[in-house]
Length: 348
Image (cartoon, rainbow, N blue to C red):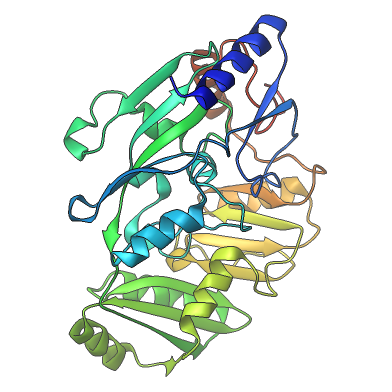
């Protein structure tokens, strides 16, 4: 066994024996997303490096501590990409943190989420056992898909050691166009275009401007541009990076994230708002009562989370049946209760 894995496994066994909490950590760029951060840091950044990457197979396997920028650099050199366009939130972002957080970027509505591209994982459980789930090809992903359960678990179920991800070719052509348009009309427009065979790979409405990215073959992109119109944005690539990394002015703290019906009307919440994913993702900045935000999301057919706001408010609100599912998953994967207690829920 690799010495880094041996050391991690031993620390887990010792923590379980003495009932000490552990906080799994890669680059720490997602530490802001927590109800509480508890436990002794268990750093996996030393376990890094690409294990296997064959561009013709459209699959990359790497260790969890590998910098996300290194993964993307290797893919870019081969004309490929992580289609879910995950945010970094800092130069120390790692592959393991990308999967553990499960955050997806502007391309998510068109291409899928982080979870959709996870083929297999290698994980240490709360007994320090080295386990493998899934594989490196889709046909090996059968039964209860443990690998994808790890996506979005924030290190509360196990230590991700290695990940196999499906990747996609970069589009031949990509342009961004913009329109001066109000929020209600932007929501209607995004949904109408989403129902048409247009090569739209991202949408974002903020400060009265709707930006639309077109990706695909040169002919398809040109035809789509001719159909929908819009002012060409020469700085389009930089703009979508700012959206992905939330460096636009509209992404102010405190920040709430609402996943709702794409056709939901503009939210009656104060504060700057950003709309992505054809209307199904709404960001709201402002000091708002948690109950008000959760209720607005429920009325709009979805749910909300406190994305960036310190520890002053609950991270999320789950109805009793869903909360019970989370409790059972935690009990099944981490019966010792040592991984990230209270990171996602005040109850456990």
